[in-house]
Length: 200
Length: 31
Image (cartoon, rainbow over all chains, first blue to last red; front, side, top):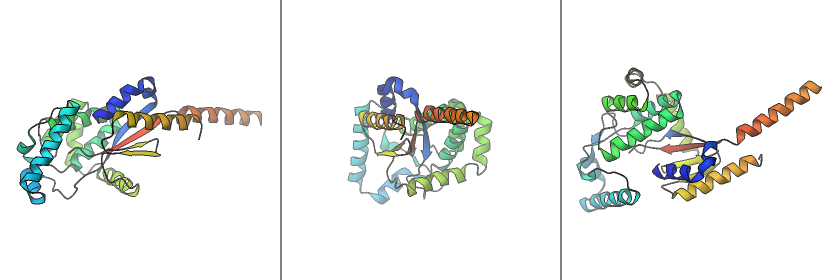
């Protein structure tokens, strides 16, 4: 997502012709709502050496991008992200900029601070900081609001063959998957804009 | 007829204006 922001900067004036938003994708929807113990969950899948290697790789990527990253080994909870996605969908109703601010807050809370982004208290605080009233966030989280919308987006991703995240779908036609360098995203957006202006 | 021709013209230039905004959807998880 930092690379996407980099791409928007590189696009300059053309960035004004881009409207963007997040759509829901859960990497592991089988995690229970309260989350799972991060260490146990990782060790159930990988041996200790592989876990260390994964953490080292993530730290390397974060350092190269200049992004803050907490000690991955100290992460307590591997959260279920359905509630976060429901809140992101609610935030979109308030405007794409509210959703973008909430997503920034969520990424930072999880990756830089190691907070549990499945916890309703944490989520309400992040929503408020992003410009969504705390009462609205609490109301959404208390019920089943936006579950259907999140599921519909996840289905759409599946039907479109999206298996990896992030995936950027540009102009409904071009898909760019994975952590791509900004210039790949810039080229894809320019291509889509040129295509649209040709009146295809 | 003239009225309807004008209406078509307005509609098509409006469409062209609309289409120059590119919609980007980022499918992503938080974790």
